[in-house]
Amino acid sequence: MKTLRAVRIREPGGVEVLDLGEVSLRDPGPGEVRVRVAAAGLNRADLMQRAGLYPAPPGVLSDVPGLEYAGVVEALGAEVRGVAVGDRVMGLVGGGAMAEALVVHHRELMAVPAGMALTDAAAIPEAFATAWDALVQAEAGMGDVVLVHAAASGVGTAATQLAKAMGARVIGTGRSAAKLARCAEWGLEEAVLAQEGRFADAVLARTGDAGVTVVIDLVGGTYLAESLRCVAPRARVVLLATMGGATATVPMGLALSRRVTIKGTVLRSRPLEEKIALARGFANAVLPGFARGALRPVVDAVLPMTEVRAAHGRMARDETVGKIVLAW
Image (cartoon, rainbow, N blue to C red; front, top):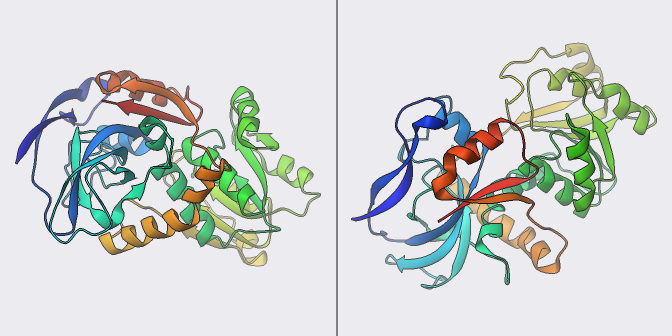
């Protein structure tokens, strides 16, 4: 066991319950590696965990937040293949990424794109893997019209880039005209301002009343019903968040008559085997896009880990475009 620094949640509450403390970390076992963490991305899930609304899954540190990281491999367990000490890696975890080091299965690791700063790499795993997994589940591709809610968020910026790379037309929504204007920097050409949660009429106007074929919903709540007002027949809706509310009233007539498929998805609670499969598929299908310059992480700010309270406050006030990254 070794002792290291980590962000700790003393108890459920506001930003004042966040402190830098110490945790103990075991040595890597068979098939595992220890990664020295350079930076970790901040996600809405971290804010929910701090508030006591999104507990860590079993077997994960319950009071150390952080779902994504980038760093350097510093120790190998037995039976590890294809990984060496000194490799620059990134990945997803169920929690604990905001510690100076963590132990993970070596098959969950993804290589950091050559030449990319670790602080930029830390903004990739959660946003891009979540978006890619959702688009794959929606079978999005050439000819689709993809509606991305919260287009200026971390996952929204990733979904926009990935959907365009798949050959789809993308329409993004947001509540801030200034943020939506920024989205043009990474390829969003059509933006709709969601005023008081209303966007369906504007989306229908942009599609000539044909509607969208895929919805990537990063808001939830009343957005589901509004989305169903502007979908095409046999559209696919993927639900990824509950920021706009954890319940929704579904207009069943629209869902039935348009033969809509509605899916819910989450990465954090998946078993190890599924997380490994996701990491391997993502590494093969998506990582080359960063090397080519076709994809890029959108980083709003890089703050020292000592400013974790300020980072939570900034995200809670909805002041960000893209990701906040915390660095050691």
